[in-house]
Length: 224
Image (cartoon, rainbow, N blue to C red; front, side, top):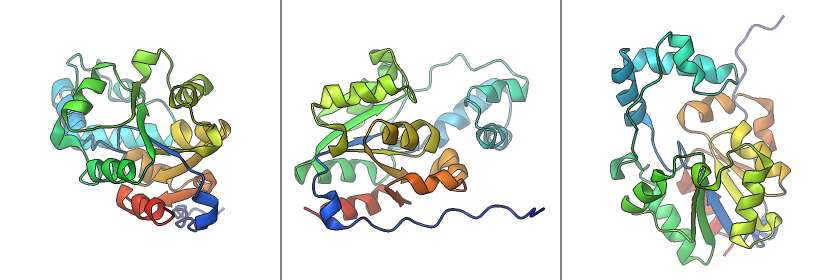
């Protein structure tokens, strides 16, 4: 038996410019795609009475098991935190706003749609996020990876699924269901899920794999 740790999937080849010219809309996930959740996880660690290191270690275990992230509280033997965790302007990754602004300036329809509480929409706007469509699972009443979530994305955008690129840090919640819905997909390898999921063979199913939104911006602007 080969007991070596699996190697991360290599970066995917850049799609040819011709194959990307018909992308009209780019939709971004929120957590660990636009938002660095380090501060938020640190906050809830202190609330439940463990160190951030312990919480992140157990979150890694839950992620590796492909379990929902809320199972981490059971793994730790603690009650879930009760204090709402907000998105603050400083939580945005440095490349988030420049990416959104550059793509809109280039003529793309740009959207944000992720599994978030309804209040996240106001918080993202307060942080400077300006997009053509802002949506949360709480407001829509349907969450990823449900096909209904991605169908709603297409309906609200008014753009055919084949012309939509969905960008996220998870294979299970982002890449695979968006691909099944007929969208193109971009996998961002950052955050806990991004690094764990990059080790999985199905990471190769993403149309493109990048380590930052800056890389994705360069790819998309290169075909405009």
